[in-house]
Image (cartoon, rainbow, N blue to C red; front, side, top):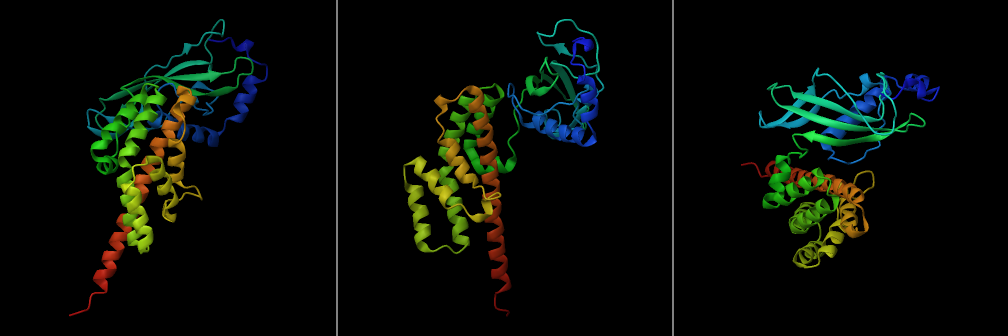
Length: 304
């Protein structure tokens, strides 16, 4: 490993002093999100811990092919090692988390048979010892989040486009992923507008507003459809003043050819998270309103 005497003189002390229990817990939460949701070759700015013993993940929810469903996976007691990254000169064993590639192995806690193997690139500035993030450079089985049943039910046959987008994301093809996500939303825009129509109708919207939504559904202009959906977004879908439907429209308006694969990957990740959020929030809102209206109708029935 990188000779410890070549590290900046105050490096070890700074590393020891700055990493407490709260920071460790924050790292483990971020690490879980990274392991569960991020594809290969996506550089994230999660700050790794100073020591190797802290570079761990407590648990992750992953798909188990043996159990045929999402299960909790935890780390195994397998031997850890590090593949040094070029540029560090000579090596000696040290407890510090240095620049290189580190393995993580996780085991299904139900069947104790299925394992996941990850190779995580840790970026360290050799001049200062400061870390600048993580990247998955290997994973088996491949990263491909299972599409939740409620999303699959909502998308129907178009869920196949979503799977293709996720496969592209897994292989680092951000531009391809964005193209499939755009096709998905083009296919889903009319059901989305219909869902907005149903919500507005349950809320007692006037006939003029409902007629406008119907006209948007019949329109052939996808850009106008997505912009209109953002304009009529119900307050219940807003998050701290942010309109996810407008976010969706803005992301779809990005020119993919003007972006690198890494930039497009970031757009694809935002698109996938926003699509799932919008679907869930709007469908839940509609079902709640419908259920409430039916309950009130029953309660207000004249007693015989």
